[in-house]
Length: 459
Ligand code: SF4
Image (cartoon, rainbow, N blue to C red; front, side):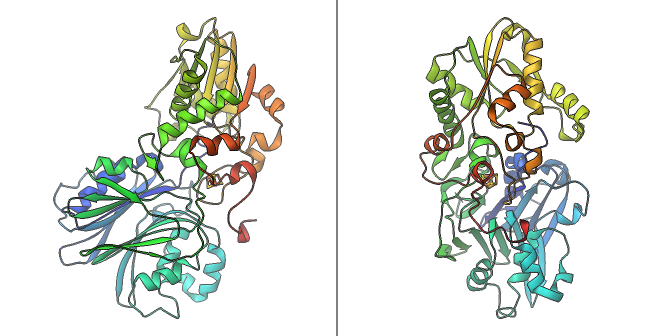
């Protein structure tokens, strides 16, 4: 993985009908921190049912470091962790967004990316001036107050109508004073799970955060489903008849935490199975196999189990190097890789090694890693990638570099191998990816260019 080249845009967490919902959401967001580190926020109802928002740049426990546990006794809240692009109005784009329109108070948190955002904003005409951020995530908040349903109270009906105008990837949490709505796009790009906590409910981008707050996973929100949660429990409806299960393959490969379950499949189990299939598709003889932390570790276990090649710890990750140390120049990137990854010389010296990584973006990190392993005395370095070659950009909320920066888009496999300097290089197939998750469908557009939606003005 090339550091700073591939990022999840965000994660959402919500709670309703639970004591100290603010504290619960804060804990949930901390468990989703891997999905975004640049900003976070919580929208919450107070005891009078009014909605307030606290948010700021930075990590969850930094932004909320002054919060005294139990000081927000309201029973519903939603929160968001964000990965943002550099510069611009970054602080304005931190979610949740709060609205007060036509007598309604509500707040919205969104994970994903809207591909017809420009068209929707143009259709809203003069209302565009009402946008308080440059984030497309704000769009739903204005759409629900557009004619013909503009003055009607926000409800499942108005939300369903608005959701039908939005195209792209989204998992939404919408908070109104006595209710919480959870919706997932009809292709199911981004995950969203439901948990039971006491007599209330929680919603989370990943199940790892359900465990962190002591909730029990009930099920996932389905693609095209809108859930209403309030004092009388959960109600479900479909806001779209169309349905696909095109979950983002990168959630399994790279983004999600290994202890999360997505649509019935544990992420670690998926990765391990992908490693087993990777060996079946691309066997090699070697003295040891090891994974590049973190998301290369699980496939390395699978590769080792299937091949019988001993699993080792050939490379160590420095967990204390923040992204801020890694600047987008080649020189700084190389320094960043050296700081972040270190081969274990006594382990790899004189050995034939298989290195498992989750993906190759620019190829520069892999090249440097191979060089560091050779410098540490490795005899042969075989690189195995637990995903197909990345060739196309993502328009659904993952910050994948443009085609010109993706090495597999420009070079064939042998050329990539030569650039990286490995003795052999192989990738998991698309079929292997589906097999690893026992699935028939996934979004794999960044591998094959088959985008599940129209791309509107993105292309
Ligand atoms: S294009 Fe790639 S990164 Fe984007 S949603 Fe699809 S699988 Fe995920």
